[in-house]
Length: 193
Length: 193
DNA sequence: TGCGTAGTGTATTCTATAGTACAAAATATG
DNA sequence: CATATTTTGTACTATAGAATACACTACGCA
Image 1 (cartoon, rainbow over the protein chains, first blue to last red):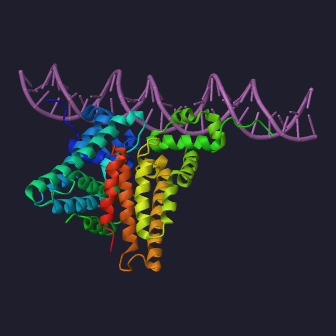
Image 2 (cartoon, rainbow over the protein chains, first blue to last red):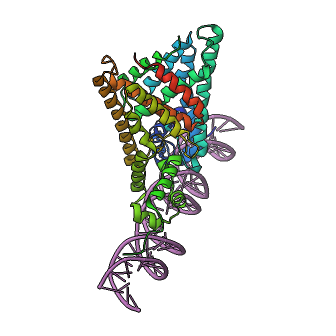
Image 3 (cartoon, protein in one colour):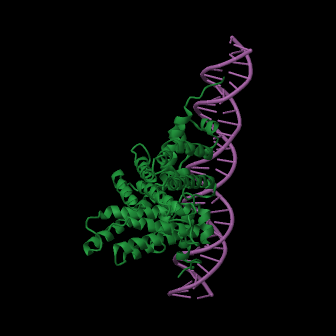
C-alpha cells in the first residue's frame, strides 16, 4: 500500500557481494555500490541500513549462495569425499569466470582499521565457523568408522581449511583452475590411511 | 650540513611495517603512521614521499627482514628440508608475539579499490616472486637428484606456497603456533617419495 | 659568527566519502 | 478519486583523511 521498490533486493545484494568481493570492504565506496546495484543512495540506506549492515546482509547471502558448497560438501558419505568436494568447491568458486577471484570471507576484510573492525571480526567468525563444521564432520566420520580414531580431527580440519584459504589467496594472484586442481591431489596425498 | 633527522629511518620503517601489517594499506591512516613512527606528517613526506611510497619502502624492508626466512630456507641442502623450513618460518613469523598475525604480503592489500591498485599489485608480484623462487629451488633439487624428476616442481612449489598463505590467513583468525605446527606435519606427509 | 640547507611543528587546504533532508513520485486502499 | 505510505532523485552536510604552506629550528661550513 505504498510506492513499490524499483529493484529486487536479492539482485541488489548479489551486486553488492560482487563489489565487496572484488575490492574488499574498505576498498568499496558507496558510489561503487550504488552503481553496481543500480540504485541510488537513499534507496540503499532505506533497504539495507548502512554500509556495514549491507555487508553483513551480503555476507549472509554469500554463505547461503556461493559458499553453499561447503555445507553440501560436508553431506558427502565419507570424510575423505567431503574433503575432496570442499577443495574442489573452493577452486571452482574461486576461479569461476563470473566471480572475482578467491573468496569473500578471505578477501572481504582480512586486516582493517578500527572502523571496519566489526566486519573483519564477522569474517573471522565466519571462517572459524566453517572450520568448526569441517571438524565436526570429521569427528562424525570417526564415530561412523570411516576415519581412523587415531587422527586428530581438529588438525585435519585445520589442514583442509588452510589449503582452501591459501588457494583463495592464490587465485587472487591469477592462479588458474587447472593449477589449483593439482593442489587438490597433493593435499589429499596427505590424507591419513 | 643541515639540521639532522630526529628519527632513524629504519626504525620508522619498522614501525610503519607494523601498522600496515596489522591494519592493511587501506585501513592505515596517516595518523596511525605518524603516531607509530613518532614523527609528524611533513617529516614522513620528506623522508618517504607519500603513503604509497612509504608502503613500498616498508615492503622492501619487510622482505629483507622478517620475510628473509624464505631465502634462508631455500638455501637448505635438500628440497624437503627447504620446504620444512619454509613452513616453520612462516608459522614462527606469523605467530610471533611481537608481530601482528600472519604475513604482510597477505594482509597488506589482498583486495582493494582503484586507489590502492598499485600496492595490491606489488604484493601480488611479491607473492609470485616468492613462489617462483621455491619452484626454482625444487627444479634445482631435481638436477641435484634429491627430488624425483617425475614430480612437477611448479605444482609442488604452489602447494607449499598455498599452505604458507593459508596459515597466514589462519593466524589472523587466532590460530596458535602449536596448532599450525601440526599443519606442517600434515603438509609434509604429502611430500613425494 | 653569520649563512645556507635540510628538518620540524602547527595549522591549513582540498578532496572523497559516508550518511541525510526534502520534495516529488508511485501505488494500495478507503 | 483522494489520501496515506513508502520509494526515489537531487542536492546537501559533515567529516575524515591525504597532502602541503610556512615559519621556525638546528647544524655544518665559510
